Image 1 (tube, rainbow over the protein chains, first blue to last red):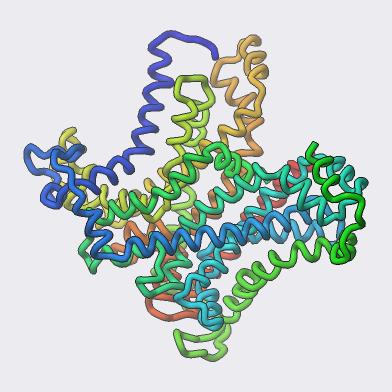
Image 2 (image 1 turned 60 degrees about the horizontal axis):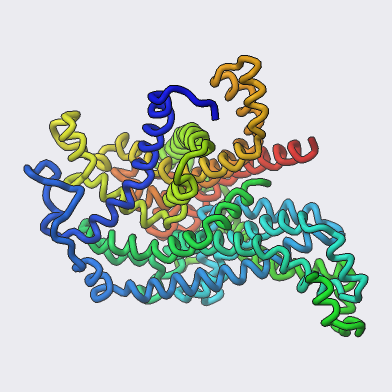
Length: 283
Length: 310
């Protein structure tokens, strides 16, 4: 880096960086503080005197208790976790196989199939949710976790396939050829030689797919209606708002706790996540 | 080493019988692609066809309906709320993309320097992108609350306002608020992707330009920007598709209100198709997104082709 005067570093680096961090992270701080603040403090008008919104002296667990005792929050967490894990595993298996086939095997239509999968990658959920809701109903999947487990792969598989194709293309062909000369079948070479080499890619795809399915909203909103079958984002939205009344304390506590599994998964695999993110747009 | 370990475990035995057919590349490809094709066919291609068929009937929830031709499309074309939604969607996508790109690029440039706690900062910056959107949007809704808004408190204390601002109660302010949330969520994605692009640019190029007397602005414009352009294009097209088809932020922040002034394609389709039970008209509204999305995808495919063949 080319060094400049000290004030320049402040003006061009520290101050903008501080603003970015404040802008990007303040909502999370606000979530935390709201989740532990008693109702009496929460609902004081913004222009009340001697009011300090940024801190509380009487933190409370009241909202968290409300969440677990008055709502089905624990069930929603379990549902979301189950759906996210199963659909991630399905998508990984499909994506690894499809990615291998498209990157490594010669067959007709390989190019057009690759393009086709790339196009489905760009189909947003909001384009198809109405006809899909009908189909789900016709298959009698409505209101079950399977409605989501089977539909989430539609936006996870294309992404996993795309990412894995990149990884498989980078594995040298010789590795596979060696195994084949030593007597392994194509299937064995793929399963025991190539896939293990691509484990970092599988991890990236998996962690990314997990956060995507945890984030999904409109399918879960439309395909599932009974409170016991809801996921966290939908449950929080529909059960903690009664008409015009928002239970802000429990809402923020729910938002916070509902984010924790994703945050934990993310914190363990930051590098893999970033690799997945940048790999996903590399094209 | 891994190769020898596995192959010696396999011994010299010929491959099992069931593997023989898979020796044929075409068969193996077929088997490997089967699960993907079934799932995508069943839950993307089929619904797409179903959606088109649905949009030319007059079916409602529980009523199959009859063929009505393009009546649904004609109806939404003359629908004032739909027109507002179309306008909003374009405005929303255009404005937020410009801001996300500018701020994301700036943040990426800041992160591309060496400073203490860089890895830590980068990890935290991605939080808005990874935390489930609906959940973090609730935090924003609470910050924009008409009576208890922390933003109002702040502006009041700073002396900028004397009365409260009803952020989500006014059509224009509500639109701005929604855009702020979208920008907030999208900046990290732009920043991290562009940072990855920046890191592939050799610092020597910039140094050489500096030695030749290029000013920082010139170095950015003539060296960094052209090299970063391919990544920027792809990131932008991805973001445009996601933003154009956005649902979650508007659904949580305003639900399309006040008085249907902040609807996007997706939220309006939801309101008509699911809220009011007018399935076919809802399907028509969301399918109306398709031509524009298709155009963006075509641009993206052509662009990727061009970059790859260069």
